[in-house]
Length: 511
Ligand SMILES: *[C@@H]1O[C@H](CO)[C@@H](O)[C@H](O)[C@H]1NC(C)=O
Ligand SMILES: *[C@@H]1O[C@H](CO)[C@@H](O)[C@H](O)[C@H]1NC(C)=O
Ligand SMILES: *[C@@H]1O[C@H](CO)[C@@H](O)[C@H](O)[C@H]1NC(C)=O
Ligand SMILES: *[C@@H]1O[C@H](CO)[C@@H](O)[C@H](O)[C@H]1NC(C)=O
Ligand SMILES: *[C@@H]1O[C@H](CO)[C@@H](O)[C@H](O)[C@H]1NC(C)=O
Ligand SMILES: *[C@@H]1O[C@H](CO)[C@@H](O)[C@H](O)[C@H]1NC(C)=O
Ligand SMILES: *[C@@H]1O[C@H](CO)[C@@H](O)[C@H](O)[C@H]1NC(C)=O
Ligand SMILES: *[C@@H]1O[C@H](CO)[C@@H](O)[C@H](O)[C@H]1NC(C)=O
Ligand SMILES: *[C@@H]1O[C@H](CO)[C@@H](O)[C@H](O)[C@H]1NC(C)=O
Image (cartoon, rainbow, N blue to C red; front, side):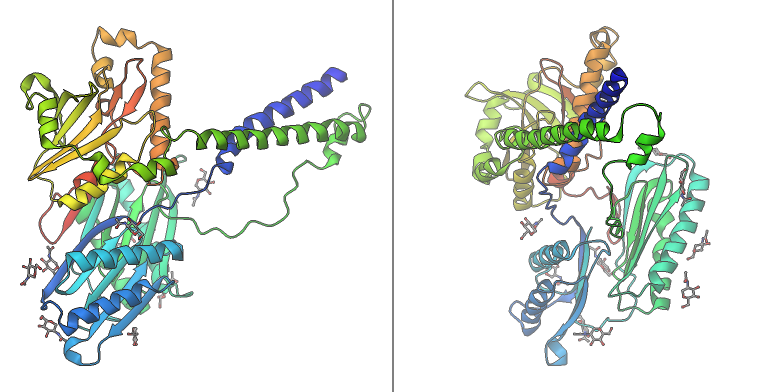
């Protein structure tokens, strides 16, 4: 009997011990203030002149829109019809108002600089849409300009997938058009593809549209899905007045109702009694279980406390305030002379390889530190300031399973990224070489898998930005001297500007 009890309590302790590791996630500092994600903008309608009444009104409109803490608003500024400006913003239905407001703030700031003289413009972020015009456009459907974005991964069973997609997204659209609680025309739906895979759909219109107008706008974007995303695992089409998106993962926040308040932590004593009648009394079990539970809870709290302290002291491994404070553009900028000298003037002997974004060279700084220098091909459309800003952001992502970005060099057309040098080449080199692959015993492979997963988890969840790698493959996993993996090329979508592969009005970009 005694062994029975101690086995049971041992199992309990073990269970709680395992649970405590899951609990670590909940005691982790909750600071995930993700920045709004810019997608695309279009200025049109001809130019006004600098400091005209119209331009000033646009400025007033922007301040007014970005001061509202709601999900949708339209506004009109200007008294005379010649300089009146109409504007509105809409946030995605699941976006909290604080993030919504930040999105509108960033969007109007970007419009101010990118479309400073334009009479009308539209800008899309993941979280919000902002438009303005000299024409009154409220309660009317606008279908141009349009934007298509696709997830580059292919879908396997195209025919049945597209069928499921259209039927699901049509019902999502019906629901969004008819939905009229608060200031929203928004709906999401989830459908089973198989037991393991789900399809997630979203549809939304600006709420100034009537249900019929909203549905006809949504029919337009849905009809454009084959244009943008035929055979792809995810995609979206955005018009100024409405948009749809689908993916194989939940990309929106689930707005779940609050769970019912009662939550018994311990099983009801009856179940303990029902099992065996003649053994230990309920009192004994309580006397054993309660102290153990308390002890384990204390243990969990202790672990939380210690791991927090450890995290605080970790500065150089995990992102933290101290890293934040010292990362400035100046501290990251290398002169072209330094880089040129370090790589022996980009000599062929120093060349390590060629990736999607340009050539890579090995180099050594005057301090002796070895570096890898990535010379970006010149097709990047991004301006210098934007490039610098993104480098500063990506340089803050530091983790032992990510290749560290040390800095950059910007000179005329040249854009160069400087990374730490990782000695053992990329995983594919070792993996597919008949001789070298023997070095990879199971223990090492496991270590590589685990490290890669940790790096990705950091990018997805633990860093302040949420970065999706979009091109994770063996050739982007580098191995250091003890064969620990380091992921490279993360954040390239930010640094390089969004990849644009189609004509002028109708952009398709990989996500
Ligand atoms: C409007 O001004 C921008 C620069 O501010 C210029 O690039 C563009 O060509 C102008 N458009 C027209 C129609 O004049
Ligand atoms: C917002 O749009 C509606 C029509 O949808 C219009 O009646 C109203 O005047 C607009 N509000 C402002 C402040 O422009
Ligand atoms: C968006 O606005 C926030 C707050 O003003 C700022 O910290 C952030 O850098 C902005 N992001 C972009 C991409 O402009
Ligand atoms: C808006 O601007 C365009 C281009 O300058 C002009 O043709 C149009 O008449 C203007 N519309 C109004 C209502 O002022
Ligand atoms: C997707 O399929 C197309 C041909 O249908 C092929 O060219 C492309 O490489 C595939 N992409 C991926 C990521 O598998
Ligand atoms: C979905 O709606 C579009 C038009 O909006 C229609 O062409 C298509 O047949 C519909 N598909 C399904 C499966 O209902
Ligand atoms: C939405 O409303 C329209 C009429 O306004 C109706 O025909 C349609 O069946 C409704 N759809 C849903 C899903 O309730
Ligand atoms: C999807 O499948 C799961 C299990 O396979 C099931 O529990 C769930 O009800 C299904 N959902 C829908 C919407 O069919
Ligand atoms: C912007 O939108 C207008 C109107 O749809 C279109 O004519 C123009 O080509 C677009 N400009 C760009 C750069 O896509």
